[in-house]
Length: 136
Image 1: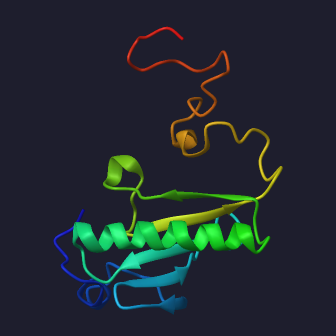
Image 2: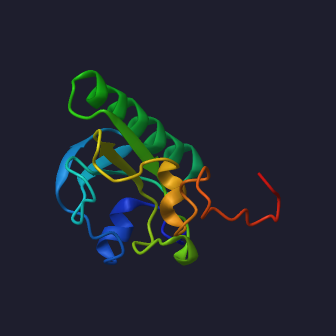
């Protein structure tokens, strides 16, 4: 992902451009996404680039997403992380996206995060092509 060992170092070197802090705790800083794909889109950024702390960021995103659903702020949510340029990562410091979802916020939500590959989200459609060559 990156040779940066912590968020402060990444920010000092211009690798972590976030600045709109929503809240923070000992291991994770939560930022409002500069380019949200949905209202309430948040980034959970580990203070340290270590697997255990990245896992805490994922856990925190899931906990917060569940709280948003319980409070009626959204109907569901996606949690995702892009690791590497081929996966779409543009900010090369680990961060976890929490994307609140609402009923009817897109034409066809089937497949959720599977939509990162065009035409592959809805595995129930005729357009889906199994990349491993297996039939459905």
